[in-house]
Amino acid sequence: MQNKPLNRYLSSNISNLINKGYSGLVLGPRQVGKTTLITSLLKGKNNVISYQLQNPKTRAEIEKNPTLIINEAQAKKVPILFIDEAQKVPDIFDAAQLLIDDRIAQLILTGSSARKLRRGGANLLPGRIKHYFLDPLLWGELGMLIESNVGEIGISNINNDVPYNIEDCFIFGSLPRIVDLPAEERGDFLTSYALIYLDEEIRAEALSRKIGAFSRFLELSARESGTNPNYTKLSNESGVSIQTIKDYYQVLVDTLIVEVVPPFLKNARKRIIASPRYYFFDIGVRNVLAKYPLEKSLINIDKGALFEHFVMLEIIRRVRALGKNYQVYYWRTSHGAEVDCVIDTGTGVIPIEIKSSGRVAVSDLKGLKNFLAEYSDLAKVAYVVTDGERPEKLSDNIIALPWRYL
Image 1 (cartoon, rainbow, N blue to C red):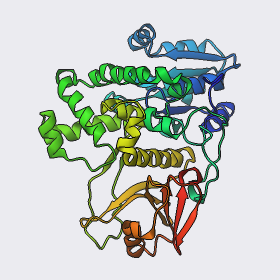
Image 2: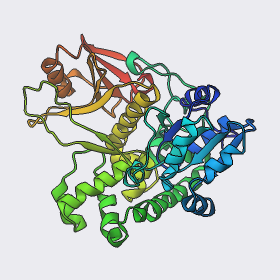
Image 3: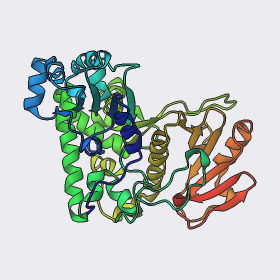
Image 4: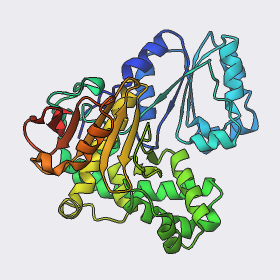
């Protein structure tokens, strides 16, 4: 177990924000470490007022009287207000706006449901606070990288000697609490996480009367994570309409449980598959919801899908951690040519194929070759991320990178 919380890429940004007196909102799924991060950064500051809205008593007091935070802030000289799980009381954002505009207080807020904020009509304080997103642990936060070879998303280790490896990620994901637990306790924690999510998040979305259908959908969608979902199949097997299935996916998006990867459609001359792909935000959570065994046998059965999730989630998280305005897509034609990931940097694109084998041949890369031919004006070099040992140049414009070198 770790003696102290792992360093996070977001720490320096939030620390600078706090020290400069600005306000911020940190979004992210449950249990990614938002509370731990903010608490550690505020440690030692004597003008902090904290509101933990997951505490029913605190939440009830502020729901009854949102101006309470204004009154308490006015009693101190420009305090820092830390409001945890702010989506639980959306009206609190109006009070936050007054505090910021009148320079009464600095605010640091966290939240885990964009849906609740929108439905509650929350004022997300545009132009007044900076928004951040905290993910589960990245490879560099786990000390797994050797060297980044793709400059646009290059990143370095910020922790070392973390007793957690790629197989652990395949089975249990990379939530900070999971990494900190003994191996024998990780399965119970993940199972509890899934049950809490169902009980608190989904019931709060007014789906309690359909909890059986939603539970079936959740299992099926977890099994289809990383694919183009078959709405008709999901509808038939969960017993609800196709439109309801689409609505359920939107619930998962808005509660930050899945990542949406849209198709790359720019200047296409071929017929392109146009539906998005959904990746559950953490592999361990996906495994539990899919009711897969949390043991090494799962890797033998499902290594290809697990490795693809492992790499895709890292790319999505890394783009956010670097603060890049890049877009992450996939590409697939109606004839079956496919590229797992296309990073659009705005000035060009980086196609990336993901192969769980140790070595690959150019003959295995039909999709990449087709993409490079189709978009020669945008893509100059392509990569294959593998489970190999050393980088290898496969052709003039295709490089194989073991995942530790991404």
